[in-house]
Structures are given as C-alpha cells and as structure tokens.
Image (cartoon, rainbow, N blue to C red; front, side, top):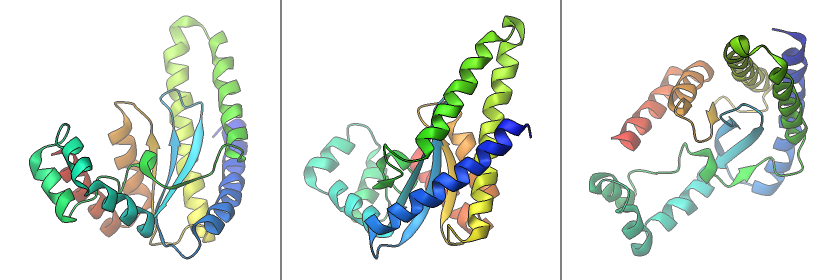
Amino acid sequence: MEPFFKNLQLDIEKAVRHAMEKIRQEMGEEHIYSAALVTDSDCISLFLAVNTEEALARRDESDRTPERLADLRMYWPEKLVSRVADGSFSLNRYIPDEWDYSDGSSSELNQVSQQLYDREASLSDTDADAYDEVHGQFQEQLLETAAQAFETLRAEGVFDPKTFCFISMSDDDRTPDIEDHSAQRLNTPEQYKQFQDWTSCFNA
C-alpha cells in the first residue's frame, strides 16, 4: 500500500477512536449492534455511522404507525410491509443513513475526507487514457484502507466482536457488492449469514 493510504489508515483509526468516545457518551446505556464506514461514489468523503438496538427499536416502532405503513406500501411489496407491521422485519437494520449515531460535522473524519478530496483532485492531472484506471485504483485502495482500519479497531476492542461492521457507499450501483464483501470479511460466518438473510428479504 502506498504511503498516502498507510498514513490515511492511521488517521481513520484515530478519528474513529475519538468519534466512538463521543458516540458512547451520547448513547448512554444503549447497546451497539452495528457500525459502518460510509463513503460516496467518488470516494472523496468518509463518515462513521453507528446504531444501537434501542435506537433501531424506536425507528421500527415509528415504521409501524398506520400513516407510515401506508407510505411504505407505495414503495414496498405488501409481503414485506406486513412483516414490518408485525415487527418481524426491520427496514433499517443495515441502512446507515437511517441510523441514530454518527461522528458528526466537526469530527476528525472530516479532515480525512479533505485529504481524500485533495488526493482525488490531484488525479485530474493524469493522462486521459489512464484516468479511469488510476481513479479506479484510488477507490479500491480507499475501500481496502477502510477495511484494514476496521480490522485494527476491532482487534483493539474499539468495536465489540458482537458488533456487525461493514463498509458502505451512498447512492451507487456498487453498494450491494461493497457491503457484502466487507460484511463477509469483517464478521463471523454467523453474523454474515444474518446479514445475508436480511438482505434477501430486503431485496425480495
């Protein structure tokens, strides 16, 4: 891995450690079940999203109101909405954008994002014929760096072994593959199977 991403990994780890201190203060006695590092389709931003079982329960309860169920029926199959209504399925369990906790607008991950933005901007000097390949390598390296940071943080105990960790990308066709690959890599087979089962129901 090139020096930029080696140093970036250290910066991500440091930023996440500090962000988790803030999040743990905010959530009090709630219990974390999942954490995600989320980037965008250009890989020039990165934020941490975390959710707790208690926060998920609050969101699921709000999804079961008659008004909300009526809205869901406009976009989701009745079979899935019925499971939401009876409490046997959560639409939000593995959707970081719907979670209650994140690193916030003034966290050190914003500095990481600035580094990514500047690095990506420097790629504009690349020869046009080579740009797509170089940009693709940049994105692959960021995803690998984020995964390695998660592995280090879990080994340190920043994330409990029971916490489901994965990497996500906002609004991109590659998102399912990125989430699935990282979920399999970063978690136990049992945790990954639960994620696969949820994904199958979500996409049915």
